[in-house]
Image (cartoon, rainbow, N blue to C red; front, side):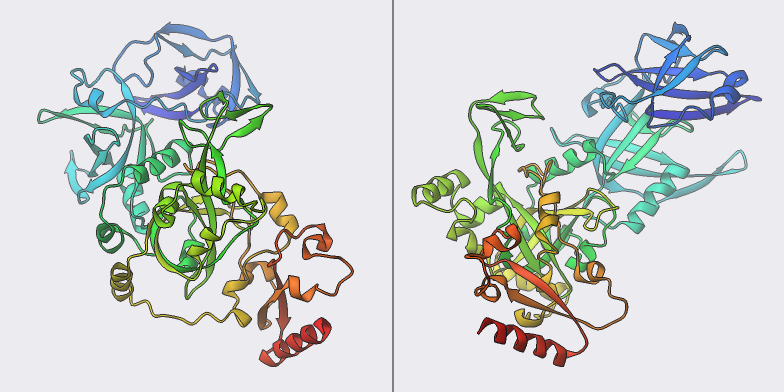
Length: 512
């Protein structure tokens, strides 16, 4: 069940339910009459899947129909409701209507529609009285991707307040909106949409696939100059602030690439149609998005960068378009050249190191995956700027000062790994669309160490050097888990700088 609402009028109420049914995700309306509401109101909830038995069926007539199904269903006293597990039925069952179809609609009271678009304009909150009762609304403008069509959307009462509060609480460069069960209305010769009183549902930058895919498409269709992107339109957040974001958002930030996270692959096998990562299936490659097997693939970049600023550090994922633009070589050419030179598959080509120690402006998408995990987000780069004059203007605008980052004693640079077990447990396949991206697995020092109020100093120790005299031949055999000769291990020290110096001395003595 993707939507439940309760309508009250003239002394009686009907509970409305929109049900998605069948593998193809069709939608049909069910209604519980007021005399039966008490029997079912506690046994049906949004987001669950139910098997319904013994219903009555009637033609789906009337105005503002929430579905265009030929029939609608009614609960009876004898109706049986059974909760079932079935992941094949979509959670929301959206049925998006193209803007061109809405704009050309001649009978605006025929049905309710679902719309999806990015907010390109917003009016002020309008307050007035109707029949002595206060009324409120705000008008926003939505734009689709294909064709650049724009649609007027009016949000009334609670929907208007919800939208305005979201803008206040969650500043972002863009806001993608879904209005489900919207009412079409012809106003001064132009058809727009608005919410209904009872059954509309509003999503703003929500963590749902439809909005996430649209946000990625926005990046692909971006035509702004670098100055417009970073100096005029972008909403700036430091890396520390990015890590506090609780919902999918797009921001701009600045930072220096201090390392390439070699434990992740620098490229991947991509679907030539949708760019999603392919999975090897026998002698073929399978794309779960296209639901198709292919005999060939396209090599695309997926580089994980460790980026630092004066506030914190984080793992950023850089995909094919921006990586190719900076490196001036396509991923497939670099891979072919690297293999021809006998390159180690567990390392990356030296060309990838061109990113290291360089300062960039980043337009990033913060995608929330699991708020219960240690690192609940993935930060992917949608645009990169390495022009010195724009970087200087950005620093001046936001009064960002150059901060020296000392590797010997920097908590920011120690955020690489808590253990390689954590890496193994959380690694996932990446893709150029950001649909399946490798998780930034590494917890921040302040939250992961969790050592009360003691002063914590963090040292970066070169494990290859420290373990050089151990009983194994190479660092890669240390505990059977390390993957690189330059693996960084984090050592936490309680106390002051003197304690840190003592630890360095001990390490040096043990090395000798």
